[in-house]
Amino acid sequence: MTKREVWQRGPIEKVSPILQPVAHALLQSNEDIETYTSGFPDELLWKKPVNMASVGFHLRHIPGVIDRLFTYADGHSLTEEQLEYLKAEANANGNPVALKDLINHAQKQIHAAIHYLESSPEASLTEERFIGRAKIPTTKLGLLFHAAEHSQRHVGQLLVTVNWIKQLHGIT
Image 1 (cartoon, one colour):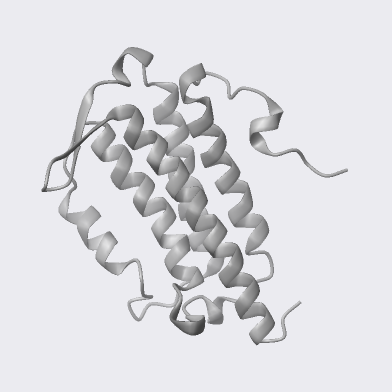
Image 2 (cartoon, helix red, strand yellow):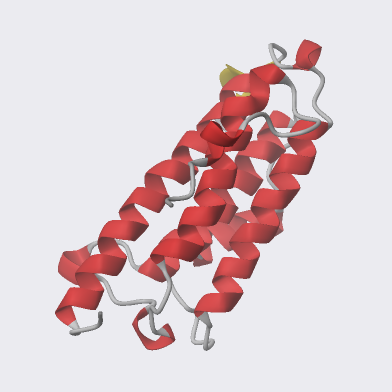
């Protein structure tokens, strides 16, 4: 029997009904990352087929974007450390990186996001927030929702890139 998608398994305990779609999407990303990268070799993490983003990029970008958008949702500006992480998402920086470490980092960030959702009162969701130096206006809910949908977008791209690279290298 096929495992049901996260949203089909019922509400996430302690998360507001309004934030359930955000929690479901993030937890689905969490599961799909592990499923889609199963058996993917570390040495191909930074390959860019037809100049598409690498598997390593997606695995760094997902937790990075969640962290940044949740920082904005909390009403804060990005730190220098977050800006440095953003700059480094697309490459291994000369350091050997293991797939399991990238997955663990993504999963840790997703679990931190779920904890944040558990402690987010519904009354705060329509509060005005701003994105970046340009101070683009939005709401706390808008930022949380975008973090979830953006992670789902990159999980889809991750699936395509993993499959493309596996096919190119004869990996089953």
